Length: 96
Image (cartoon, rainbow, N blue to C red; front, top):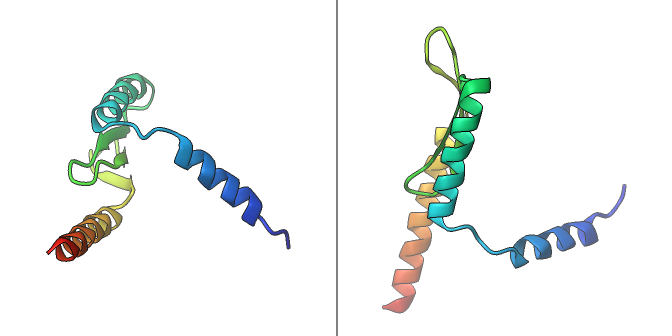
């Protein structure tokens, strides 16, 4: 078995050095992607979760217009929201 810790560390350092996109830039990129994909694959929908700012991809059934699959799932988004609230609570408790 190969040890990938050096490779993983390099990836982490590279991603940490990249500037973070602003919420507005993410929203703009999502809208652009949504418009481009809509003509090719109307069953794919792209959006941004307002609370967490995470990108969401939904696969829609053409016949029923129901969501077949969503990435990340609603459960994962709810978990992210709960963790964010918990972290904010810890930060507030430390400041008091």
